[in-house]
Length: 230
Ligand SMILES: [Mg+2]
Image 1 (cartoon, rainbow, N blue to C red):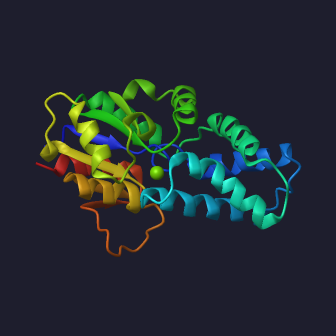
Image 2 (cartoon, helix red, strand yellow):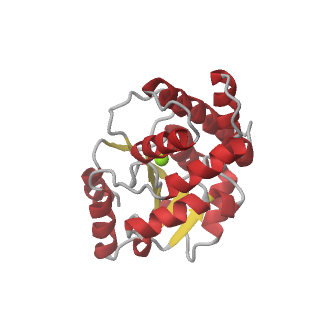
């Protein structure tokens, strides 16, 4: 029976893609950088590559945050301070908290059932995540927030999960599942940690080497799955 749910935040409960686009577009405007679709797409790709490098242990969080802007500005051949850009972006991003369809309803229902302890597991930045959690009104649904920067390790490392597990009273791996949209951090992380995994896969991606125990294309499919696990 599942008693502990590790839940990813970005693109699982909150719509990070939408927030990221809005925040980066505002940042470019503020810095007088043309916010063309092409430039925004390029930023998104570079950012993604940087986070993948972090997941592989090849970049630190600090290197990702500023490095993504350094790389972009170098490519665009513009002379803008990456540290300033990062600060402006972070501020705008902290104000973005649209839900993934069904995200709030899922939290309400899990919480109301009284059957689960819900733990947020995110690699995001505390100064961005906490305002978004507060403004979206979801803070009360969680027992604890496990934010990589505060834990000292990031998903998918086993160390991240071991640190979280230590902080949960009466914790058992067999009673625990992680739910998230990322195969490289959530699902690989859950597999590394020896817990069940459920991939939120709204675009129906095909699986390769990382295969979750469960897969859902819409968040309302989760509760029936949890109920089916003995
Ligand atoms: Mg995510």
